[in-house]
Image (cartoon, rainbow, N blue to C red; front, side, top):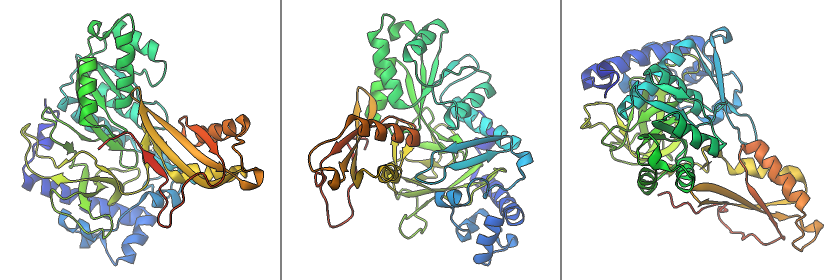
Length: 432
């Protein structure tokens, strides 16, 4: 089902006209209401009248996550705080988190974009959704929640954790659709298949998974174990949250909701635009956002674009499966993790060397992260990792990252050095 035929099936001429009008308004609003963007535009000698159509977007400046952190907390907001009715935030590295503000209009648009995603998956008002994303500063839980309500379906805000209770609710409440990370879906599938009440006693038919990388093999395993159709949902908190792009029944790439989020692919080194089919870094401009609009935001996600019309009838631009990142960020159990966050914890203890490795594995369908770090030489050359130091470091990492990590303290000179760029991360999940 197509939720908004008028917008999702526009002709290329209609879409070009709409995107152009929205970009002109966006640049004009930012020039007059955002000191941050006014300075950026003035540095490039650009006035609002210089931007006549969406084709002029390549003249505009890029925005990065560092810009958001540098101007923490509200420096990129474009409306007074009296118009901001919700705040979300993502974890920072060793510095500031990323804070995002939403006006009432923004939340209405968000509910609309998620409704489009859900309809593309075949969901409707007859469904009962369990939303097992986190309900906090993370955008996953509330983002799906209001989209589900928008299509008239029933939402059960289960959030994450307490899997045994969740499984009982799936049976007792007749839940038909599950929204969570794909790794949690596999974990739940294993729990269901080993519990007294297995999946054959459920009404589950649909799964909406995102917030972390996953493969076609994972999709097949989830579908087989849970007896559902599994779909990908794409989003990021800086742009809006879940609901930026979605698969349809043909699952041949994800449809960007490009009347609200304009996509480009650029070479991550030269920042020059790349043609359809060429892999590069995804850049998104928020055409209609009020609270914190972003020009040409560098997502760091690597993929390609196609503008070919899909068999489903939608004319929106599609992105390929995310192939990786152009930076060193990891996604572990749906949480963004930067090596610099871990390095900051290591350095603040005073008892550890800045020589470390991050090892990520997937065991029993759950991401597991281990941090190996050397103890300072003056504290002895043997493997004298005290339980207290390991526990203290693990607790501090949980405070910063929001997820558990196993800490393994090793003797000095244990971790291999190299002359070039140090390889800090070993990702054994085989996600590509």
